Length: 130
Image (cartoon, rainbow, N blue to C red; front, side, top):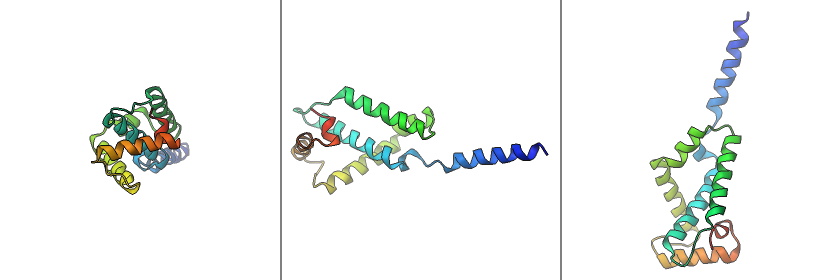
């Protein structure tokens, strides 16, 4: 009789672990990380645009806290953030998004103009740049 409640608890815990999607599928985290990555690419590409590094670090820490609040472990978060395949996927996602905004990422001047427009417009990406 005591075994049945234990089995039920284990089954519920196992189903809860399975129900958690990979972080790449958590849109609020993945999309925000993409915006941070775009801002980082702009600051690396454009000599006249700098990053608001402390703001960027704070935003990344906020994403990590959000992921933890959703039940992800530090190991899961670190794997998502450092995985070569995730970085490649994020680059493709960012390039696709930028193209949808009319930006050719191969054109340095176009990317820099986009960065300046983001700063002038007070967008999330612009808030990470100066």
